[in-house]
Image (cartoon, rainbow, N blue to C red; front, side, top):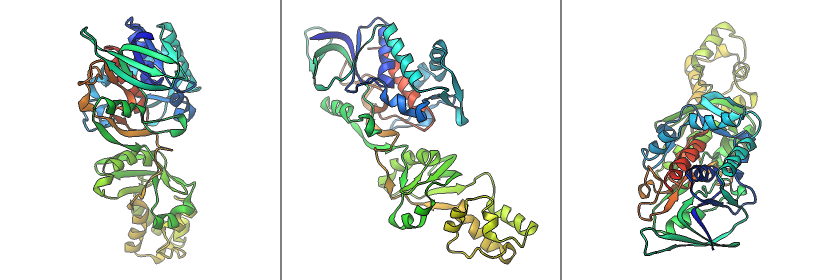
Length: 402
């Protein structure tokens, strides 16, 4: 049997960060992963550029049954701490809108940086390792040990960290392994659902909106008390794009309660009704559909205005009709039929109940020596680097105590 102070299951963003911090403290650490490469999800993130953090990190950017749980870890390892590491490795990066930070070159820069830090602190990494069983061995000493049986031999440790991620991005080998371990040790699980995921059309809407596939429009999208201004993308299955991914997580949390519709205001930076009145005054002989086509793609105009005859000059329409037409675009109520599921979801909502864990150490309260970090925990960030920051912060927090 190979013995270590700390075994981390999952060569993920959170797992590698935890390994680095634990080993920096002098702990003997090994990371085990079933994949052939470490950091697989990091490599494909952000279109291959890795949106590694955000300037605007706060607990308000996260969904959890306990909205306060994430505060401790986020306060102890902040975005500027990760930027300091990026700077040390001279990785070029840039800021995009909404405070999102991306690599200039490739997400592989982040992976190589983490692997270099692991090497610097003598972290062992064992890939292609299929875990078969985990047991807690009770000793006469104050602390118990964990025994892991795997496809390549047995391992033992005092501290066991689960950093296996969620159920999203199935093609990268996502599984429910971490949740199964939590259940094995009688920890409560908050029901999991796909988050940051495209929303699907109902059969009725599919017939109407499917021809719009490929069109992208900036919008303000709202649900309950949340609102985002981002691009919306029409697809052949439903609606997607950053705005939709953002609101999808909030809609999913209330899906079982028969939630209200999602409200969409296309081109939210103008008042379409007031603009149409101006156009009616300035160019009264121009056809309404051509005026609308100055703002929206023609396919979108034809689709949204099916119930109105828009082939007449704008002067022929009264204010009430122009108001109704503007409402089609700027007060669109969308009722999703569902989502496209874990196959394309960027994150997993739910996970190990935060009430089962210490917010300071990430250790299970009922199982000394067992830790859960990253996406497997019921803490889910918005789109924009927030989930990576949770990975860095939760991994660092656990790494200080394992």
